[in-house]
Length: 120
Image (cartoon, rainbow, N blue to C red):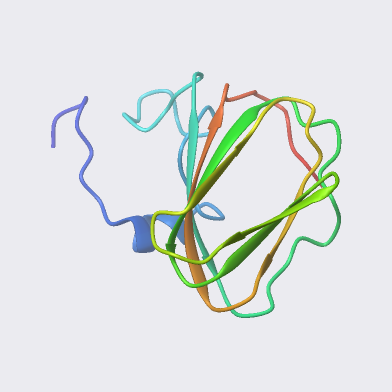
């Protein structure tokens, strides 16, 4: 493997870091290190949901449904992702939460990757 190439499996690699495949939190020598973007492979059993709403979000996010049925809650709006490829984008400062109506796999892309930023 080259120092600038990484080949992996999203399902296996995601299990090692709470679903996150790429971002500032990867070792600086790892090709998956990025201060610009974060990518997550989220596998959610039916009924899985955020413990509480994310408030004061400092990043923009894109969430794409790979499989299942997944609901994203936004202020004054509930978005259902039901067909493979359905997606939603929300900007900085938009509060949100989510719920897996069926066993679901989603790909999340957030930017920028903010060191030290964590949502409880």
